[in-house]
Amino acid sequence: MTFLNVIQPVSQRPQPLFVTTMTEVTCSDGFHEEEREHGQPFRWMTEHGALTFAAAPLERYLELWTLSEFHDLSQRLSVDSGSGVEEFPLVHGWAPLSIVVGAGVDRVKLRASRVFPAAFHPDDQRVLAIRLRNLRLHADTERHSFVRRQQVNGAMNVREILESRTALQSTPPSLGIDLYGVCNVKPPCVYCEWDYSKELEGDHVETPFTRETLAEWGPFFDNAVHLVNCSIGEPFMMRNFDELLDVFGNTGKVLEMTTNGQILTERNIQKLLDRQIDLYISLDAATALTYSRLRNDTFDKILRNLRRLIAAKGGRGRFPHVFLVFMPMRCNVRELDDFVRLCADLQVDRMVLRPLNASPSSVLDWERNGHHFSYQDELLPFDELVRVSGRAARLARDLGVELSDQMDFGGAMRDLFTEEFERGATLATEDNHLLPGAPVLSPPGPPPQAPAVIAEPVPAAAIRDTQSAIEGEPVTSLGGEHQPVCLEPWKSLYILRRGVMPCCYGHGPIAPMEEYRTAWNSPVMQSIRGELLEGRFHDYCLRSSACPIVRKHQAAHVLPLYQRLYLQARHWWGLLDRRLGGVPNSLWRPLKGALGRLRALPHPPSAT
Image (cartoon, rainbow, N blue to C red):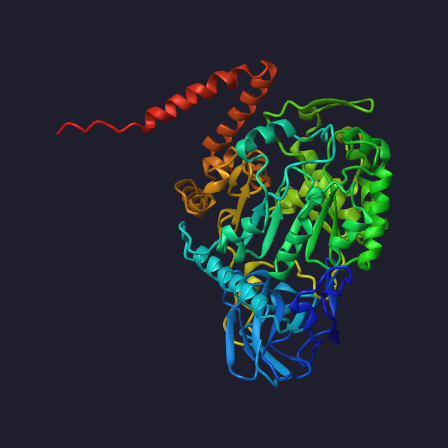
């Protein structure tokens, strides 16, 4: 079986050196047959494997992405490339590696230090160690150096988490960026707090995002593997968009980018083809009528654009990945079934279920195409969101649609709320306001397991009896049980016009945009990390009402009593503030500022 080059040349733009010098790589001994995850092909390797290719009289670089199931760097990959053996600690999940291949070499031998314990895949009797995908062999020294920096920084980042560090030498592997601050949807989407967001951006509202921006960021950009565009705006309106996409792609980054899809012209489609981009399309509706109540009358145009894009990229699994987003609200939740069917019909790479932010201060109120949209009235109660998650999971499974449920960010949705999750998967009734009139589904059985799909974790007692096929020691876990419930403050930093934030769900900035370097290890950032290491949520987390992890812990009543009371008090304060037209907050803000200034004053010396 041969891995074809992941990036196919697009004649309309100049091709970088790593593309023009790419050579075909074949998985030889020690690999199982090709499988797919989220539409992308990959191969499981046993404890040993070999990759073969045509020899060349110059030094080259083997670039590949590996997936390790271990969280604690205990799985290592030894690579014999003909001129010596290198050993790489593997971070959990998909991550890039770049390996030097000497002149005249036509084979690379791989060995994993331990295999994925059989207790974690009891229905799959094969020997499984690591997964590989995106194999490239090229002669681009600059790209090799970028990917090397990413892998070294990623391993250092995990090591610092394992050592319970709050001040980090590593930089964030995932970087939130702010590409563009202008949008083509006017008036804005009914749930978009456009005016408030632009007010927060202040002097940075027109700050350009250019190659010089990336150069100034230095290691913050160089070491990042993932870039997440969090613009309050439409990136396809940027004049220098092509140039930035070239920089992102040539340095090996994966870009997550959200668009409304209304200007996916043929030219813009060509810009995207064969680039490592996860493209999120905000649709939120399965019919033109509902879409017009959220935005405007371009629904049919967007569907035509999507069909052209998916055909041009060669279908599901090819870059750019097309993710279709649905935010369940009162006005659209009845279209969930049809939205999943639409995803199946379009052959998108993934459906994304994204809850409307639980923003107690939002007072958005619109009349749009005969519908009165009141933000607070559109928010679904938590138990209803759980049922929506259950139903989406069931329908997506039955229709063969990959699903990413952002309410399950941090995991545990099904385990903490089993009854409501299963209720959503099986029933659609008037009394719970979930999809009235939809067909009742048969009771769910276990989801079908492809050979390489990871089974649900088995009881610890069963795992203790499992032996590693290589090292022979008892395997009690995959090393993730002692990690904090949220790793975002170690893994991510969002450098946005409205300020620096530790995660995408943050309630507000911890520093101005230009202070991102000091913000990364600032007192508040270290305090957030320290509280999470102690098994508690920091006050910043509790004030981030949109955070799915906090919301799940609150709904499951597993927070300490004082934190539950604090969150309840914030909820009632938000209701009071809205009822009184914002007067309570307008009075509290200056008082809060004065109290903060008093606390900052130097204390008089104590009497002795």
